[in-house]
Length: 128
Image (cartoon, rainbow, N blue to C red; front, side, top):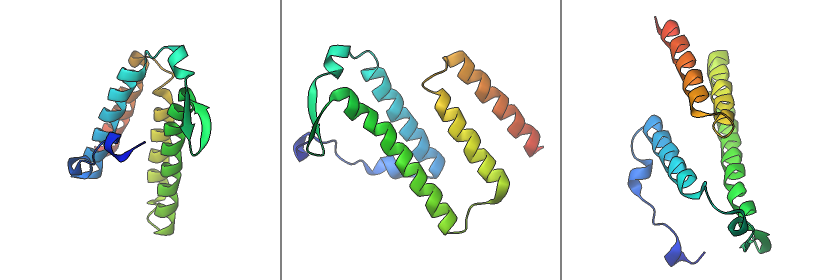
């Protein structure tokens, strides 16, 4: 994509702590999901280029999810390399987060709210 058509970096996107950054990332993801969710199948089949290969738009959009998974794995490797894994509790929390993330595309909002409420209840018990 030509540079003039690319979004400009916004320093505010990476300001603050991890929770704020993840929150902004989730908000941006919700925005794109809302704007692209009803895209007609014929439009998704239109040709486009990816890394010099002709593919369709659907393929390009699915690459974002793969790219995020690749970055998540790189983060896990960095955590291990820094010996900052944090023990079993943090590993379990990361696994819970990953499993919860898998539900975002497959579960209805009521189910997601129920999962989140149950997790919050368990976290409250652990804090007390």
